[in-house]
Length: 327
Ligand code: TYM
Image (cartoon, rainbow, N blue to C red):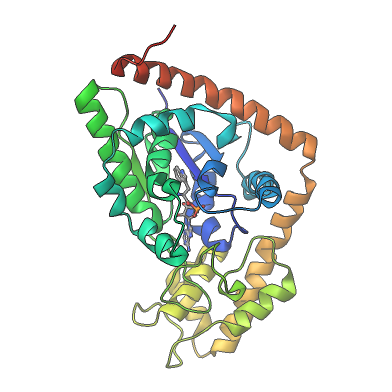
């Protein structure tokens, strides 16, 4: 059996270069080596209130982003989470395996619940059970994600191990794939926090649909560190973040990047970084536009059929193991 990958992104807000460099880029790189499933996780999106029209539009846009990034539908399976009802079905079961105390420890829950303050939805707490369901349904070996998903992967492994122990060997226990560079791209307006889709300040992130002027403006405004030297240095997170983006988008080694900027100023770094980003995003956005609605519809319905076949088989086994039977 070939090893299998599962990963996904939420269709909330615009995907940004952090999502691309931390996750999507690796999905593309790994798809030839693994049997890959890439999912638009719209059921996760509704754990915080969403505008229904915007959610529907974003769901399709994120699928377009996957294709524009280079996910090849001939090789990988691309689908929408809600098209495969087994995700919600297994999530319920895993809600009856995971403990409230484990869910309450999740830093993403604590952060998001703090931001919302009141009327926090139950789904926000049980989100990791749905994410575990996404992954475990497909007997996944590897989950390529950014650093912020590490804790969700750990709880997924714990859930799988507990289920296997209590009901018999059923799920493959997945590993996270977190890249050494790019797993945590920081916000341009504050290098102490990660670039985030849900950030209120739009200047913190470069989205995959930003135009050239917007990209230039955002980099120009980006915060820098004290000092003048342009080199990778943990003590200078803003410059290191910009250099990491430059390194990943150009493919130049970190030492080459440092040599390139030696003796140059921050303004030059920002302007070259804007050039490189614009050059990367121009063909990306062209590819997004080139995909017709019909083609996208066909890809997603093929993806749904392929995903569902695997999901059904796992669900059958899960129910049998638990003694969940009907007429
Ligand atoms: P989401 O939609 O927030 O992000 C999608 C992917 O992008 C990564 N990422 C980043 N990487 C580097 N720097 C950043 N600033 C940055 N921000 C986000 C994320 O780590 C993620 O890999 N819970 C997931 C979606 C999900 C999922 C799954 C992922 C649901 N089910 C099953 C994998 C497997 C999420 O909210 O990602």
